[in-house]
Length: 90
Image (cartoon, rainbow, N blue to C red):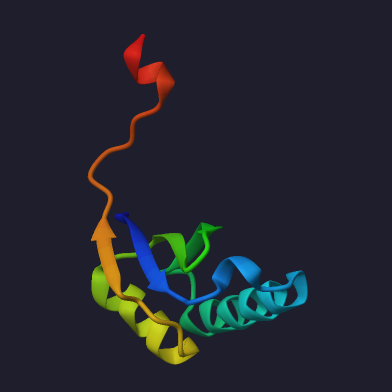
């Protein structure tokens, strides 16, 4: 199944308290449960003003549906074509 990176512009994201991040995470997980197993949240990275999320989903429309149901921005959705890391150089 395809994997996607979602770029979410959230001013001040890096200053969010642990509890605020927990609330956002719980809301996301609740929506994922409603949508069923066709979409999975892998992980997210929080920077100063953006959150980058990795999802597994059948298509971009499913990722966008999750964002809309949760009220989360999805400023850019990009399908991951391949992955590299230091072991790729070996």
